[in-house]
Image (cartoon, rainbow, N blue to C red; front, side, top):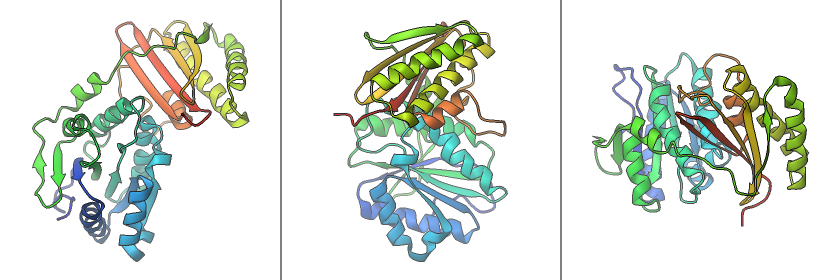
Length: 314
C-alpha cells in the first residue's frame, strides 16, 4: 500500500509508521517512495544512517531522484528539524506536492533530547496544514519504549503497521503533547551568569560567554556559535520589551549549556520552528547553530536552554 492519499484529494497527512524489523521498514517505505515519484512528488528521506543505507540500496537507481539525509546529523537538534529540514524542502519544492519521511526518534535519543522530539512532532500538525504535504514518521516498535510509542500515537492522527491497513489514532492530541513536554528548565547549581539590560551590554555578555566557553573546551568555531546564541537570545528579549535577559552558563555531559531567561510569553509555539518567509532571526538562528535547544514558556516568562557539544558524553 502507499502512504499517499487519493490523488484527487490534496491534503496534509502525518502518519506514524510502526515497524519491528529492517525488512518491514524497507518493504513498506520503498513502494511509497516509488509511488510518490511516479505521481510527481518531490521526496525527502531523513532517517538514521543504517536505515538510510538500507533504503538507498533498495531504491537502486531511483535514489537519484530522492533527497537523502542522515537524521542523526541534520536532526541532532530536534528543534531545528522543522525549519532547517522539512520547511526548507517544502518551500524549495513549490509548486510540486511533497512526501517527506522523517525519523526523529530512535533508540539512543537521550532523555535530554526527547521532549524536544515530541514537541517537534506535535508542531508538524500546525506547520503544514492545508499544504499538499505528507510527513511519514517511522518508529521502531521493537526498540522504543511503550511511553515513546504512546507519544507517537498522541502526535500523529494516523497510525500504520506493516501488513495492516492505516487506522485513525484514538489518542491524537498534539496540543496536549506539546504542553506536557513544556517542562520547567533550571540551570545547574554551579552555573555562572550575567544580565543583559540594554543593547550596549551585549558586547560584555558575548565576551563573558566566550571566556567561559574557551575555559570549558570550545574551539573557535563553537565560540562563534556561542556568541551568536547569546546575541540572538538577549536581543530577542530586549526587542520585545521582555525585561532584562538573564544568562547562565554551565558544562555537563559533554555540552556547554547557555540559559536565557526573560519575562516574555512564547505565545506562538512555531516561533523558531518554521522557516516561513521572513528573514531568519532569534530562536530560528539558535535552533540552526545549537546541538540542542529546549524551551519552556509559562506565566512568569520564557526560559531557553541552548546546548553546544564540546566533548563526547561519557
